Image (cartoon, rainbow, N blue to C red; front, side):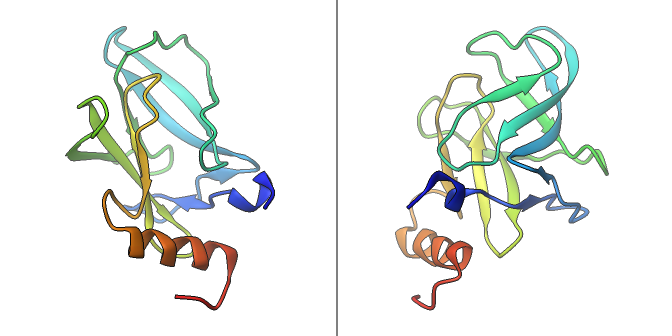
Length: 133
């Protein structure tokens, strides 16, 4: 399996706008610790944690994510299981969702939500367009 196969094509859960641009996901961000607005690009490769941002985000800072098209919040009321910060969510174009932690440096994320292995496998099979369920 190559890393390219794990490229997530995501969209906004509110307006359904495509947010994947090449191998990056474009989001608007508000960095709570520094009170700054920013354009932020996350890697669209699942499991890769690179971030490009037009302002510095301190390690451990919490970021509030918004859709750059409709400006709706992408934040959830669910805390990260690793660090307790709020989670954010995007829809996967082929079905399902990806949740990710809003704290800089935390690697908490999940396909389809935490804890449901069967749901995660169905999402992965849909992403790879395999007939298994």
